[in-house]
Image 1 (cartoon, rainbow, N blue to C red):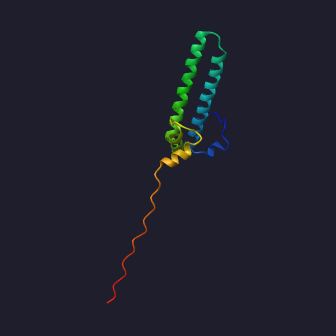
Image 2 (cartoon, rainbow, N blue to C red; image 1 turned 90 degrees about the vertical axis):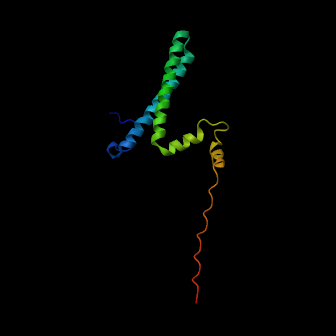
Image 3 (tube, rainbow, N blue to C red; image 1 turned 120 degrees about the horizontal axis):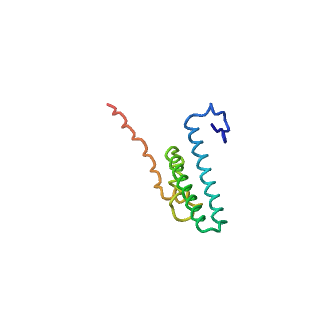
Amino acid sequence: MSHEGYHEPIEELSDATRDMHRAIESLMEEFEAVDWYNQRVDACKDKDLKAILEHNRDEEKEHAAMVLEWIRRKDPKMDEFLKEFLFKTGSITHAEEEAKAEKPAAKPKAAPKKKPAPKSE
């Protein structure tokens, strides 16, 4: 079993952390493959080979999307950020501020009701 990328003793890591590590490593490998295929497509002079390389590159993109979806389902904070930034129009760098502006402001909590003072006789 590969221990590439572990920074802590593997026996001290939970199954969930090791699975997430596998997913992140896989995602990085898929994107690296996309990059390699992009370079091959640019350099390739043969039309038929270029089409094959483009097809292979796009398969890697599909794999990356599937792994990213698995990560999103397992990591609530990643899910939150992906929902905040993906498939939006406008400035990417201002998406956080725009998302905060879109959320309704939290209503202040009402002060607790005071109990009426006991009546004196």
